[in-house]
Image 1 (tube, helix red, strand yellow):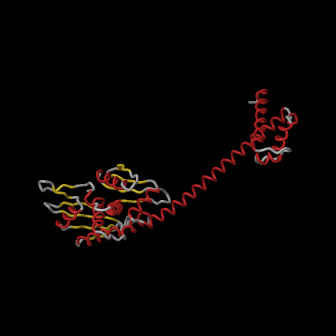
Image 2 (cartoon, rainbow, N blue to C red):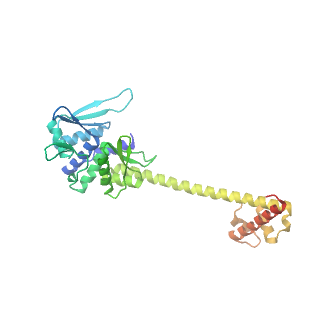
Image 3 (spheres, one colour):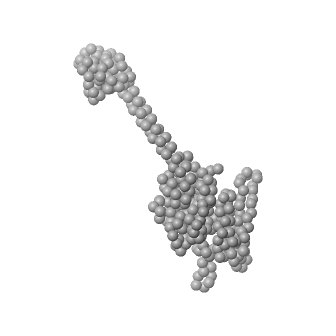
Length: 320
């Protein structure tokens, strides 16, 4: 089971204590997942479709608990493509369907007593802050998904209306988050890509088990990345040290071939001989081997003098 499905299963099991939160969650599910079907004159149906049985039970329970609707449930399976069951829930009673749509503010009457469809999120359904949390939870159950955090951090809500996606993004951002919206084909996407903000959103929705699992994954990934950075840094430093040592040895060999290192000043000759005899030694180690020990900077200063001597000889001989 995917991380997204586990998160939805957890959210579907949460108990709703207040009627206002129940209606807020239901309002989000209707906007994200509901389909309004008009048959003939003044005959309407509402349909909900999902492949997640936990979400199907959630929708059925919400309607049963608040309205006592006799919701028709159909189960379909596509054996050829080996897909999961598809659960279709239908509220076919026109009066009940109309009442539901009016209660969640999707259907609204104008002054002429004519109905219009409202895709925006009405402020009237948010009686308390907990209602905002419930609405976001319902939106995630109705059309949300979260990527496997082992691979990437990405949480999104997919819906078909631009106005609703913009309102949903504003609602999420009212909790101090930074969700963004984009269009993708015929859909509008509200998304968050930062791991820390996804953790905060899971907390807002009430998915605490998924939150803890994601946090554990984040900690392990961060430790792994830190270790990789340290190893890469040490490898780069080691490579740099080896390349410098090879260059120094080549310079000393060239000087010895052209003029002989015995003609170098005593302090320069000593470091040259030590470098040839101790090719893998660090600058600190070379400094400690000198007759009069010096630090890394002193060793480096003498080796730079050797490099300048080698460059001068190459220039005089035309070997550059």
